[in-house]
Image (cartoon, rainbow, N blue to C red; front, top):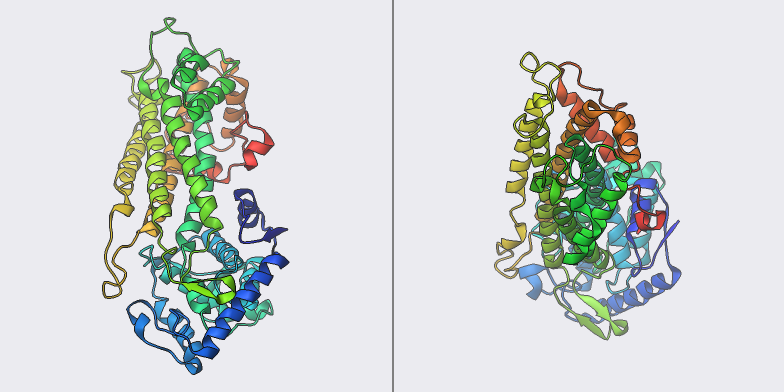
Length: 507
């Protein structure tokens, strides 16, 4: 059971809720803060004070006063009018993450919602009811307005959801779980949609997949090193310490651990003096990606526990302040950095694939073909990797450098953070496909060299990998092999990060 406090949500807890189906409850202390904040909103409405979003319209309409008889209509109109997202829906796991993060933010007690709003959000998580939320339409400032409006629709019994493997109407799913829709009152609609939970949820899921993939690249690269009889000296700890980056040191250590008992690695001068950069510089390049991942994780952990709506209520309602915590710039930068860092893992992986298949760069059968000339082997797999890498380069253009004014120029600078998060996720998806191709080619090369000469860690990987993709003894439809390997990597059953403790894996 995960207890939300609005302050302490961790990646380990998010992982349990998203992927293990862990149930969620709220902290009683946090809910008391929510109740106090709600009293302040009700007092503002009763006194007909002019406070943005409570007794006024929104955006450019912030100067339009709304009387207490119309506050419910104001919130309903807000949700319906703002639910205008387009495109394919977010993955169901991202929708689940959005609900979780929105509930956690409201539990901070700065938003002025009734406890029932948070209770309904947790009902959705615990019942596995996930709103259908279109991916496109958020500018990443004023909050993720369009995506979160589609989430809020479900609370009032409107919109669509994913429920038990099917896409259905929200009211049907709610009825089956005996969950009653609510009527949103003052401030509640705005509190639900004025935040960064779409980009943050997408970012959290992207990060979790990126972290897993970053470990996988190291073991797959280790297999490639064996297939190419790479020089292990480049991974010596003294080299890494001489530069001083912790992540570089750790990558090299994991590579040495994976290859500690290999008979296929070489020493400098034994076959050649130096390897190409795509082998020799793995600690430096992969280490830099880990630096970025650590930065991204830090920002996401802050944002997961942040109050990001507007206005915020302090001092039992004595201080109600309009600000800009909904602006997604910190996450926008983090998502752009994440996309760039993961694109580089694909970039260097594709260069290792080229070294595995190019007969001018190794002493292996050309294109790892079982019958060079008659059979093409892995020739076109490298083409596919190159195409994916090229696509990543276009996706890696920073979304955060763009801004388009909205709401009659009232909202004149926006982050585009949700676009950055979506692009980062697509880059990670493409990168996994490239790594799947390297895994197939690396296994083929290492097996040609001799399984008995491989390290324990890499031979174990090959043994399990061969249950997914057989040895290439003749040409076949390799797209099926790539997809099978990609699925295996995504599921991540195999223990790729063998050198990590259980505590490190869950941190």
